[in-house]
Image (tube, rainbow, N blue to C red):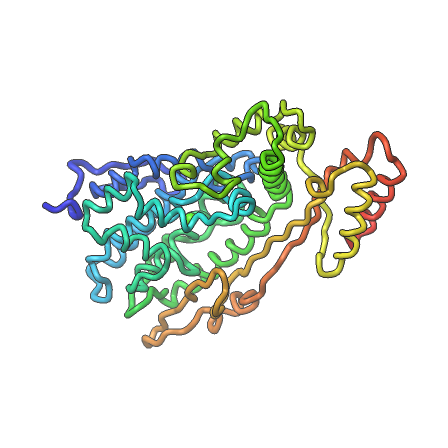
Length: 434
Ligand code: CA
């Protein structure tokens, strides 16, 4: 028997709070789960800094990756199996892509990627194709198999049915994270009838469609996604922690470049500071490593690095006000000057941050996150794009919502010296418009 079709002597199951059980029968999947690069995902939280707001949200990218795998496994083994429009030989590649789709995520991905201008998708590709345990396992399937898995994740794989199970507007990735993040944060949004959606998914020609009888379950899914974004993913307090994290990394980089003598030198970050990093430098990082640095940096002589680290570790976060950079750009300049006058460095203590989402869209050429639309299979066999059948979805289609905030350390503005300037700052912040 070839490695690609080899089954375990006995099925393995993982207990999972969202899907109850995750089933593994394939030797390849079992070996991948036990590889170093997949185990590393246990040390990276799925929701980054959100645990500082929702204390239950400590689940890892490992949890989520297994969940995405399980959803795809159910689709291909229980729903698509033996349907003429589904090519059975795609089973293993889509299962592997599901399990490995987030492999390149690093510690606190969003902040880390912003500061060091790296991209987790590039690392995913490097882990799949480079000198890693994951690559060794995939190579045993076939010489071109690692490349195929990488293509599915990069959405360039020729069979679009396979691609859309991993990344479309209703894919296994989103279906898992919405439910999982709802479960661990404890919010009441994010729940929808996934069993129903899976049952009405159909492979046709070059796509996966939803039988029109499942439209209401899909509407519910889109609404949960919409609400999760505003209630959880864009939470302004979690973003405050992200802002501080970005500033810690930025300060450490700046100090290192200016020749500052660290008590605890930023050894693990040097390759990222001077952009000479390789995959092994990236894989050596996880959230435990970063937290250790922040703990130690609380004792640094540099007051900014030590203060920011203390803020992150002990959750002394920045306050925020609504801020529209289009309207209030000049005010931001004035505020920066007042911060300087008050002896507070605005580069580290006055930060504007924006975030946005598009709840559902049917056609977005050239957008950074172009995703396949949701198509309904009508009773007579024709195919109709979702927003043309659903008024609810039509109402929120294509409307990008952006949230702008301005972050600052409120308590530094209240006590101590330079009272008049500080009062002027508080007045401006309170006035709105900013
Ligand atoms: Ca994911």
